[in-house]
Picture 1: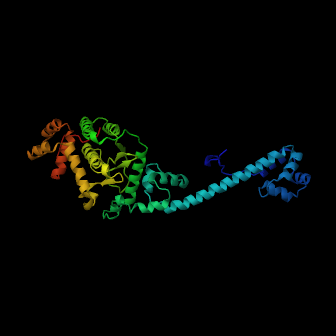
Picture 2 (picture 1 turned 45 degrees about the vertical axis):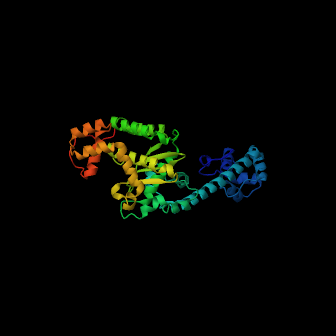
Picture 3 (picture 1 turned 60 degrees about the vertical axis):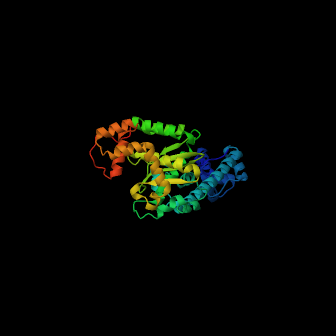
Length: 367
């Protein structure tokens, strides 16, 4: 039978302990028993204290003296030897795991992964979990992650509140979770149908997060929500996952307008960029934390434009915005005419004019 870690005893029981119980049960003194089997008392004492093992000759002597089969004594000696070997192996494994953990703990998002219950503090279990989440065969690969194109830009950030290691940890956990999801086959030609259904879900705003996730799955796109860690100002990410496009979102705010724009921005990456590069990852930080060269890149501008134009028809938005009629009543009417939630219109107005403190009765909450 294969022995697992859970069946390894904490301590191995030497047959000398059993022997002492039998000697006392038979009302022998240790001196008398030693004489009976032809040992010095000191030799018997070594057996009782586990300093000397039981061999076949002793087992036969015990059989004759205590009426307990010799095979029994040899069996418990064998079990002791095996248990001791397993314990020693387990201890060595733990020592090696502790050393390995010291090597990697500053290379991974340790606090974040612990908070998300990916790691527990047991280095043996945690090393296995880290390899799975980070998708590495050995821990030397962790040091190479910072140099990968998708992550290299985070090292250039002058923002003290951006931690590249935590961002990579967030990305890797989200990608790992996405790999566990199975969805329908992706069909690029159903883009307009998908956009229409998503806008309807956003407009109704009821059980929105689940409905959006299920709708994307029906159209072959994975969606995963993952809380962010400290110094991880991420909004979303898009990437390929086992043959399907995938989107991850941090849900930083419980605001429907932020959610809608981030969702459609990542969809822009899916339809405009991922189809041409199944190795790409587009990691989008909060705008104020993003590097200008990345924020102004062709891909980011195209993803922004996709979100703006697919949430609100461009000509309709232009006519509405140029009318400068931004009270809640007009916003609500325009949103109804365009099949979109009023908070999305209000949020776009605030973003466009750069003013977010105007009073409004429009509810931004996600329901």
